[in-house]
Structures are given as C-alpha cells and as structure tokens.
Picture (spheres, rainbow, N blue to C red):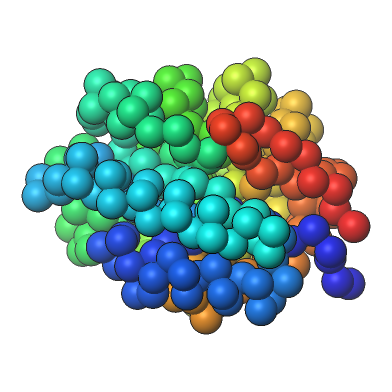
Length: 269
C-alpha cells in the first residue's frame, strides 16, 4: 500500500554530533521521496559535558528556519529538536524550549544519569534488568514532566541489549511502568513515536513494536508520530510506510505532526 500524506518527524542533519548531511540535502531527499512533512530534530543531549547548548540550538534553529522558508510550497519543514536526558537538567531544557519557537520537540533518554549512552555500555558489567528499571522509571518521570511533544523510541536500549548483545529480556517485568507511561502520555495529550530505524538494524522491528503501539491505543493514546531517525539524507523516509501500516493496524486512523507545538492530525490514506 502507498500512502499520500507521508511525514518523517525524526531526522538529523550534520548539526547533530552523529549527523552527516546538511539541512538542504535532507529537504531535497524528502522532496524526491514525496515526503510531505519533514521535521529536522537534531540532537540536543542536554547533559553532555562538552556541549555548548546555546551555540548548538542557535545554529540549528537558524538553519532549519532558513530551509523552512526556502522550501515552502514544495515541502512542509518543521523546526524540531530532540532533547535527550532533559530530566537531568530541567531548568536548562525549559530555558531552551522557551527561547526558540520550535514546531516539534522529541523527548528521549539515551543514557542514565552520569552514564554513557546505552550504545557504549559493556553489558557484562551490569544487571540489564536494573538498567531497564532505571530507564523506564526515567521515561515515566520524563512523561510526567511533559516538556516535549512525542516520546521517542520507547525501547531504545533493546537495540543494544537484545539485538546486538543477544541478551534475552522478559519485557513483561515492565508492563506496569510502561502502562503508567502510556497513561501519562495520553492524559497529557502527548504522542508516542513509532521509530522505524530498528527495521534496518539486527532487531528488524520498530521501536517500540506493534504490541506497544496497540497497548498505547488501548490506554487512550490519541497521537502517534512516525520517524526514520535518519542520520543521512539518503535514509530520509526509510520505513515510514511500514510505520504507517503499524499505526493503522494498531487502530490509529491519523498520524500526527506538530506545528507551533500543537498537534495536527494527518489522515492515513
């Protein structure tokens, strides 16, 4: 099935520490692939020890604002940001979000407090269940705080614990806390992201997978966003149609984009 209202709302330009291509290159790729809405959501891992938050956000907002104007009429560019670990520096996060007129903010946790990204951890040295306890508790705190629009890649650590390290995890241990996260998102009119990057990694699935998307719907979730988590222009839109199908099969008839931090429902058709 082909979809006519494609939106990719999780992408990274060269302004991200791990990005590779310019905002212009991302936009051109989106247009070539018939993407209608493109949110450029560069990383702002707010707890980074060497990060100049003001410099990063100033440059990123200027660049995205420029292409938003330049490509108007051909592509709906949304000024976005992915705030990582905002719960560890709440005042600074709120300052940044009040300073710039973002369209869309992703909330994420890539690491626990004063620890490295889950990507870098040596899991032989840790109890993975304790790590995941802290991770999901952190997501619940993040959801209750609510300084974002969509919660990014709910099952992020599984990219590395399960898919890469082949450590089996009984996710039923986290049913209660994940339900609490979903109920909080729904109550606060926040979205849950279907992150399609995992479809092209060893896990071969979205983050989170369809069972979680269905559960979010059951618990009152109204908004889902779809993001490729692309770090290359060539990967813009990758997996987005699969993400749309998962949303539809989970009971959603709309996906959501955010403009001026307000949700806009886009029919899945």
